Image 1 (spheres, one colour):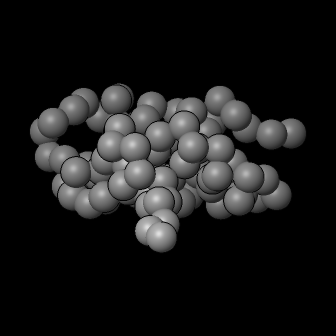
Image 2: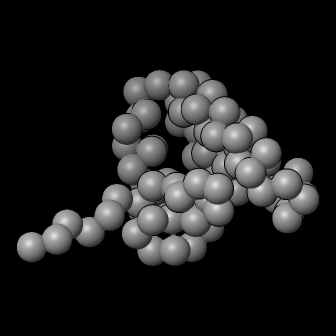
Length: 81
């Protein structure tokens, strides 16, 4: 029996390995929010680091504002506290 892939990014396309949409997909966002529920600043640091890596891989295939929203904007909107 084969296991379904986790909702992780496939580099250098930054598509979800499991569902194929732009990462982070909804399941990945939910997992990240749960994983970092007690340390939201650490989540933002991790996402910003991944955003920088994605910017290099994706080159000019999107605007900086789109990358910010895709990688960190959603997490900022879900800030706890």
